[in-house]
Length: 363
Length: 116
Ligand SMILES: Cc1cc2nc3c(=O)[nH]c(=O)nc-3n(C[C@H](O)[C@H](O)[C@H](O)COP(=O)(O)OP(=O)(O)OC[C@H]3O[C@@H](n4cnc5c(N)ncnc54)[C@H](O)[C@@H]3O)c2cc1C
Ligand code: SF4
Ligand code: SF4
Ligand code: SF4
Image 1: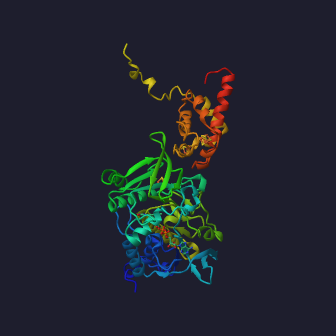
Image 2: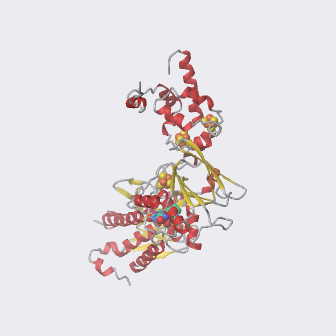
Image 3: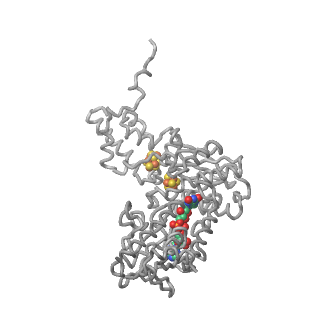
């Protein structure tokens, strides 16, 4: 039974108890929003396409800026959703949201149908496909990997080796891959990759103190609380070197190392560098299912393809279709703490909507 | 006499108050994309001419934006108009066209016998 329920029942009207909210996407945003709503006494179904909840955090090794465990975050959220009584449905990918007589009908490609009074879309983000930046050689040169590969490798093997099985002596981390790039159609900044790069650079230095690490950046965007202090730490304690210049191309050499071409813009001269491993800091794109989730309702994409809010300041979680809300990186790139805060605010918006929904007995 | 020219800031500082923007405005009129340059250096890194000489196409743009036009006419002669710079630009700027426009305007101004 729901242990939270008795406390809050006093505040929750009978009307609210019969409301059903469907949350699409069981990443951290969906889990947080669903558990907050269920603790308020609402019926909540959380739908996840993968076999388990947790989203991208299931792949990450350590979290910036404090090197904490993503596994613990997911575990805690799992406990919260279970305790709050959220109905979790995995292996189900929602592809349609339709509004019928003021209620929503969610369906997948098979025969699953879910009916709800309000919907939260928490479908997260899609990682940029680095093969699209051909000049960087991802998929062609085996020692070019992405920041996502780095996390997965660290999680699985706990170490970083070149394809030849040697310890890299020099690594280049490339910022803004698939972000801030008109050539791939993404002009926005993915926000979290600069700090991800610095975190990964520090991890490499801790593992392989002899290995030189260079970050190639256009601008360093360390917007978050504690992000800049990690940058300082990277310089002071970990000898990470920062080069202001965009990588123009990478070429593989016979020994499988890579030759990089960039401009050292502070020197004002072209630069060449051979490295054993390249890490591409891939950006965050709108989730793949977004366009189909927008098809049968009034939801709209913003200029970058994420879900459009009715007002980016005052109603960030409120979608352009009445009754559909968004949480987390379905709105725009965010770090974990922002995603969780954003998800809680989405839950509050849903509560307010259902309470004041006059068509359904609200006041 | 000793050389005290370092005391004269005019010789070292970028003078934004006496900004010669004639070339810049001309380039922006015909290649408005140029306004979005973020000085990332992608163009310079890939530039055919820049790999053979000390030509720096990013700096050409910077000089243009700072009104330092005296240096330009000689420098742009080094460009081979191969267009590689345009291929890598994250802002999708037609840089080759920027160089062409500078060249065109300078020769126009020369024939009009006006110092740039
Ligand atoms: C390389 C990298 C490293 C990062 N490292 C950090 C870090 O160290 N610290 C930090 O604070 N942040 C980090 N982030 C950001 C962090 O990953 C995000 O903040 C977080 O994943 C956002 O959670 P979310 O729930 O919004 O989205 P997601 O994690 O993308 O979850 C979305 C979920 O929805 C599911 N889904 C999508 N569509 C459907 C559908 N139609 N039907 C059913 N289910 C669906 C997906 O399967 C997924 O489980 C990193 C990001 C990247 C790219
Ligand atoms: S966070 Fe940094 S690496 Fe990522 S897109 Fe923005 S500037 Fe580029
Ligand atoms: S590649 Fe484009 S944005 Fe970068 S310096 Fe050259 S012109 Fe500017
Ligand atoms: S067009 Fe000129 S500036 Fe551009 S890459 Fe070729 S030589 Fe360099």
